[in-house]
Image 1 (cartoon, helix red, strand yellow):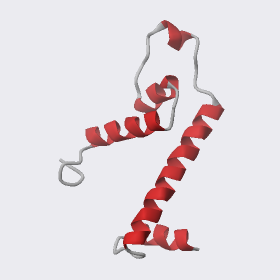
Image 2: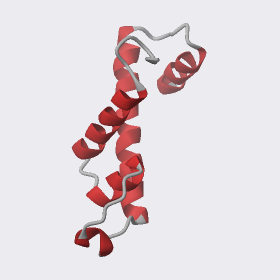
Image 3: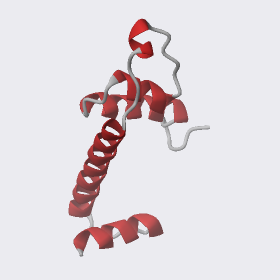
Length: 92
Protein backbone atom coordinates (compact mmCIF):
# COMPACT_ATOMS: atom_id res chain seq x y z
CA UNK A 1 0.00 0.00 0.00
CA UNK A 2 1.42 3.45 -0.85
CA UNK A 3 2.68 5.65 1.98
CA UNK A 4 1.04 8.54 0.12
CA UNK A 5 -0.62 8.54 -3.32
CA UNK A 6 2.04 7.34 -5.77
CA UNK A 7 4.69 6.90 -3.04
CA UNK A 8 5.78 3.36 -2.22
CA UNK A 9 8.72 1.94 -0.23
CA UNK A 10 10.25 0.83 -3.54
CA UNK A 11 10.01 4.39 -4.86
CA UNK A 12 11.70 5.69 -1.73
CA UNK A 13 14.65 3.36 -2.39
CA UNK A 14 15.04 4.90 -5.85
CA UNK A 15 14.99 8.37 -4.30
CA UNK A 16 17.59 7.38 -1.70
CA UNK A 17 19.87 5.90 -4.39
CA UNK A 18 19.51 9.10 -6.45
CA UNK A 19 20.39 11.25 -3.42
CA UNK A 20 23.48 9.15 -2.76
CA UNK A 21 24.57 9.51 -6.41
CA UNK A 22 24.07 13.30 -6.23
CA UNK A 23 26.23 13.37 -3.08
CA UNK A 24 29.03 11.47 -4.85
CA UNK A 25 28.75 8.41 -2.61
CA UNK A 26 31.14 5.60 -3.56
CA UNK A 27 29.49 2.55 -5.14
CA UNK A 28 30.71 0.33 -2.28
CA UNK A 29 28.79 2.40 0.28
CA UNK A 30 25.71 2.66 -1.94
CA UNK A 31 25.61 -1.12 -2.30
CA UNK A 32 25.94 -1.54 1.48
CA UNK A 33 23.20 1.02 2.14
CA UNK A 34 20.85 -0.61 -0.37
CA UNK A 35 21.58 -4.13 0.88
CA UNK A 36 23.09 -5.19 -2.43
CA UNK A 37 25.95 -7.67 -2.77
CA UNK A 38 28.62 -6.75 -5.31
CA UNK A 39 30.45 -9.79 -6.60
CA UNK A 40 32.81 -7.82 -8.84
CA UNK A 41 36.61 -7.84 -8.60
CA UNK A 42 36.48 -4.17 -7.54
CA UNK A 43 34.34 -5.12 -4.53
CA UNK A 44 37.00 -7.52 -3.32
CA UNK A 45 39.51 -4.68 -3.04
CA UNK A 46 37.25 -1.95 -1.68
CA UNK A 47 35.34 -1.52 1.55
CA UNK A 48 33.22 1.05 3.35
CA UNK A 49 35.25 3.43 5.51
CA UNK A 50 34.21 5.64 8.39
CA UNK A 51 35.04 8.70 6.28
CA UNK A 52 32.69 7.57 3.51
CA UNK A 53 29.90 7.05 6.01
CA UNK A 54 30.55 10.42 7.69
CA UNK A 55 30.45 12.25 4.33
CA UNK A 56 27.17 10.53 3.44
CA UNK A 57 25.61 11.43 6.79
CA UNK A 58 26.80 15.04 6.45
CA UNK A 59 25.40 15.28 2.92
CA UNK A 60 22.05 13.77 3.86
CA UNK A 61 21.85 16.04 6.93
CA UNK A 62 22.54 19.12 4.82
CA UNK A 63 19.93 17.97 2.30
CA UNK A 64 17.37 17.46 5.06
CA UNK A 65 18.07 20.87 6.60
CA UNK A 66 17.69 22.53 3.21
CA UNK A 67 14.35 20.76 2.74
CA UNK A 68 13.18 21.90 6.19
CA UNK A 69 14.27 25.47 5.43
CA UNK A 70 12.32 25.42 2.16
CA UNK A 71 9.30 23.97 3.98
CA UNK A 72 9.56 26.66 6.67
CA UNK A 73 9.46 29.36 3.99
CA UNK A 74 6.07 27.99 2.91
CA UNK A 75 4.72 27.98 6.47
CA UNK A 76 6.58 28.22 9.79
CA UNK A 77 4.33 25.67 11.55
CA UNK A 78 2.81 22.26 10.84
CA UNK A 79 -0.11 20.29 12.28
CA UNK A 80 2.19 17.23 12.21
CA UNK A 81 3.83 17.26 15.65
CA UNK A 82 7.30 16.01 14.69
CA UNK A 83 7.51 18.32 11.66
CA UNK A 84 6.31 21.25 13.76
CA UNK A 85 9.02 20.49 16.33
CA UNK A 86 11.68 20.36 13.59
CA UNK A 87 10.49 23.65 12.10
CA UNK A 88 10.62 25.31 15.53
CA UNK A 89 14.12 23.89 16.20
CA UNK A 90 15.29 25.20 12.83
CA UNK A 91 14.28 28.75 13.75
CA UNK A 92 16.20 28.76 17.04
